[in-house]
Amino acid sequence: MGDYSYETAVDVRLRDIDFMGHVNNATYATYLEQAREDYFRDVLDVSLTETNTVLVSLELEYASPIEADDAVTVALRVPELGDSSLPMEYEIRANGERAATARTVQVLTEPNSGSSQPLPSEWRKRIERGE
Image (cartoon, rainbow, N blue to C red; front, side):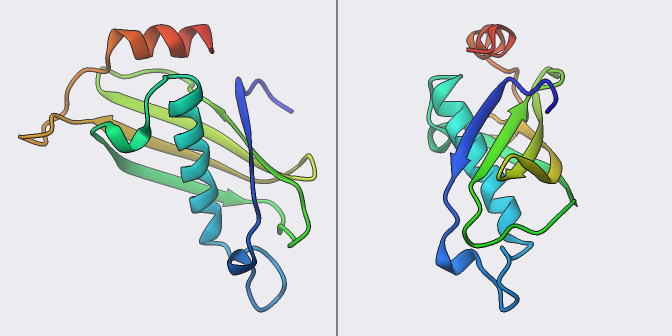
């Protein structure tokens, strides 16, 4: 299913379900957020809440609905690195089948000024190793 270097499971919660019995389309972005948080913890060894990153772009393409009892995973990869930007590509899967694809870009910022700052070299090493 592609060359995604990282995968994490997400729970489908009752509040995720819309009146048609599917996961609400807006919830897919929440699943991406959970995958990013897991990736930062597992690969970069840092909590996403303790970094100064801002989400500057989100693209999401739906392929099929997710049902309440589906096993959902999010696969993630970093296709390339910018100086201060961290693009990520995702595949949301329901029971192993693609339900959506997405792309986000986060930028690391300086906490006081809000201006962009270079990604730490340790992050670059860990991403390249795919830890």
